[in-house]
Amino acid sequence: MEHATLVHPSAFCWNPSCTAYGQVAHGNIRRFGRTQAGTQPYQCRICGTTFVETIGTVFYGRHHAQATILECLALLAERNSLAAIHRVKGIKEETVMDWLRIAAAHVERIEALLLANVHLTRAQLDAMWTYVGHKGEKGGAWRRTSGAPSGAALR
Ligand SMILES: [Zn+2]
Image (tube, rainbow, N blue to C red):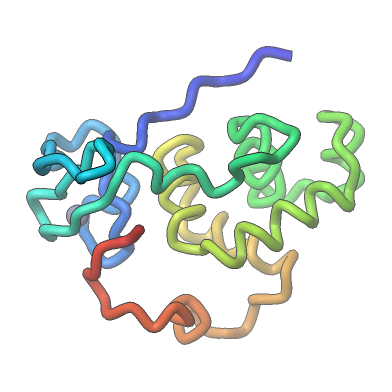
């Protein structure tokens, strides 16, 4: 199976409160020094948030490619059932639910990845979260469980 190439993490801003959140080719990201470990940090010119290129490795170590995982989450967001995804993609329902649970623990990163790579709308993202029982939280509190202040660097 062919896998789509994912947009590089340095191609968009990861800060959900930024106007350029998940927007690719906005010209807002610049290189920002270098860490001691040699990873390349980036900064958004609009909100000032810095992040490293490893920020997008949410599904690191999974058997399936991240592109496949995002594709399945996007199918859920487009209101396909788990059974339909199994038919179309050949991936077990439990596996997709497993990914969704991981996604729910990294909401802001997953949404940034989906916005940048699959071009979902807010309504579609919300539809996806209903599968893991986040519906009815009124788009708020549960997304801030990390306790990080808005605009803080995501690592
Ligand atoms: Zn930004």
